[in-house]
Length: 549
Image (cartoon, rainbow, N blue to C red; front, side, top):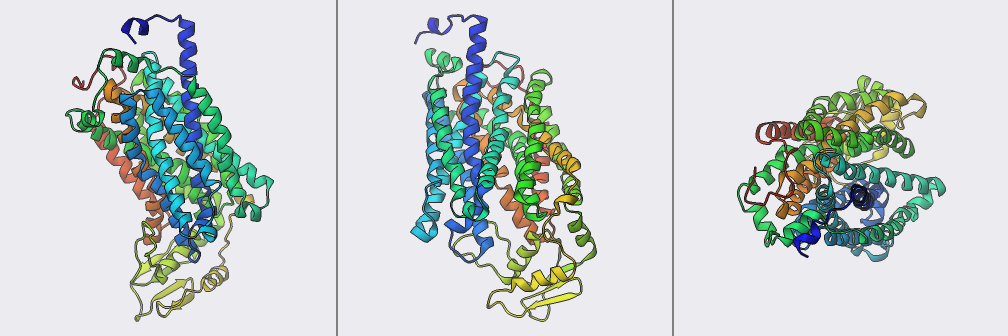
């Protein structure tokens, strides 16, 4: 294609129409990919027991979360594989491939036989599908963000790309809606047995629809131009990560923007949901409604902050969002306990609990060889009940001595399983009420707290796509922006449920897991504030990898 055909002017109405088509097609596909990704997160507690060997529930749940994490760990590799293709072959073809891989691997989870049927093949295949999903998502986001930004007029890139930023939340919302509907239509036992498969199968319909729309798109004008001028990169990986100053910007983008953005994002949407259901004992439906309401209220702010970033700059909005999260998370989660489950808070304040033992371990990844000591099991049972406890050195060589109020429970040696019922009885005797009482939840205040947390998400996430696209030169943009984005979101953010859960169990404090996002967000504020500049006025065409501003 020669340069003249590219620059044929379209009428303003045609340009607007094309731009709308680009935003809708890119966003719809990305909604679908996120829907797939979240189904796994939300349904993990159900199929944990089906795909992993029976025995220890916590081990199965942690394995399911570790499988979930596997999807994040490979995301940067997806960014490298597909980013390279996108910079060499074009944006359009690359994200047709990513959506196909994502759709097929998700639908396959819906028909996967269980551990009972095919033994160890079940977790192996599940992990493989999860890895494929992660690879596809690693290629998808950078493609969609680059594609939309390269179509957007100057002065509106923040606004145009912020539509893609809403897709993750919309995908999450869609997954909750589909799962909620399925759970409403069939009874609990059936849902646990096979009903959880339905939301995975629904994704086939979404896949066909998304593919159809994407087939109708044209290649991005920026890519067409660099291709026609012979400026497309022959080795985008080398140019992105081995050439100065681009490699410096890749590292700064990660530590000074996306790492903090990743943890703020996961805390505000996911960790909040786990905290409600696991620690505060809110039933699933109520938790979905609370989170869903906060998402509905806050989602328009992705566009608001995206548009605002076109006017005042992108970086400061992202860094302020990180700082607000870091400063307010602990009091906000404490307020959640107060307004969602006041009985639990009262119990925490009046009944002192201590665990005396020596051989507790800190479990991050659960492998087939992982051994859970009695101490691990006791601590796990207490933190899952939403209770804080003090950890003390062991008493007279006994394996574990637990004090709940005035009641002492001794586990004399390590052999044999611990008797969970003794702990349940002791908690009940001291006035513990398990489930959150729906009538005692202060709905307006709870939704307000959750909404504020999602507003932080919109601040860090609304402007980030435009920021990353503008930070890098056109001929290596897809590769360069995808890697820091997916390490920040996939590794720093995606590890959050795992790391936070382990920190809570190890420390005996249900708020201890929040120190992980707080520290990461603060590091981002410092590095981003000191070493990065704003990109809002950069030119999308006229930069190649040798003229970094």
